[in-house]
Amino acid sequence: MTIEKRKLELIKRVMKIEKSASLKKIEESIIEEEMKQRMEESMEDIKAGRVHTLEEFKQMNEAWMKEKGWVNPN
Picture 1 (cartoon, rainbow, N blue to C red):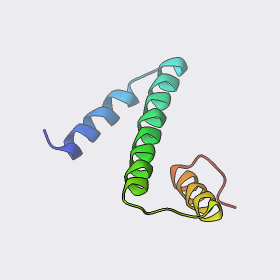
Picture 2: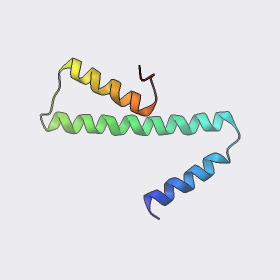
Picture 3: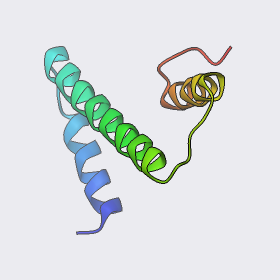
Picture 4: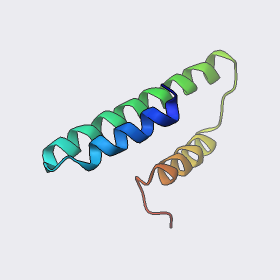
């Protein structure tokens, strides 16, 4: 099964969920995976010598969180 097909199947399954607690667990799992991916990317950057100033790091993280919809885009 292709990744796009898997995404659509998951969306269909999520649309059938009626319990708020179940949706919260799914959301938490997604956030956890996104954070793991972000951490792995950061570790790769560090190993490759790609480092940033604290201000650059802050700006990059703020942009990433806005992209994820975790903060207001003000």
